[in-house]
Image 1 (cartoon, helix red, strand yellow):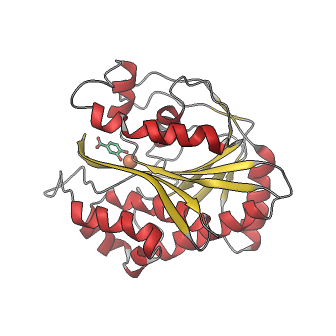
Image 2 (cartoon, helix red, strand yellow):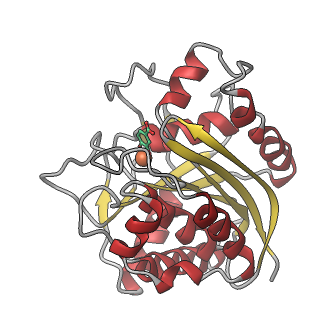
Length: 279
Ligand code: DHB
Ligand code: FE
């Protein structure tokens, strides 16, 4: 059966792409952020994933406000990105793991998750930048399965629902008749708000408590509805839902292998966690 090697959760702001493009990793502004990924890359060398299931939110590249699925999954042979207007160059295409895509679609549908299945799909900065942070040479040694959670247009799915989605993804992978080693990669967050009177809102105590909760009391964040989570973490801080779903995929117990937390990167509190299942 397939094995989940662990979960990595990370921020995904477009400015990271520009910093990579301009080689600014060692500038004082960027160093505390980029250095956080060194340990994650070392961990990946031992973890040796074959496939990455990437949980992220599309910000308007593949889905726009006129058609916005709550949950969507890719089942394409390959995925490319495109210009989103941030000035980030396009990067090499990703190879899809279509066997795992269809396995997940079947199992999740049986588990009463009604997914939008995408046999063509562009992947945006929330997918490409975390991949580029983990594999900086962009010579991808893994196949991918993109899973989108709508955190862009309200109403967004509840934390409880996202936890259940992650749980089912984890169960489906562990029940997949394959030798594959699978990494869960959840992108977004941590606290940030890009617009309105509260633009620039960051909530460090909440972020740190949330990161702690993922190993000590992982369903902690499910006590709040979406409006309450927005109040705490910001309108885009709700992207923490991808962290929650990723943690749920690990199963009951998980330990923290590594974390980094740094304010600010763009308008966000930037976070990174590497977790492994304990059970
Ligand atoms: C920013 C943050 C995001 O999560 C995002 O998707 C786009 C931009 C930002 O802080 O600039
Ligand atoms: Fe985002």
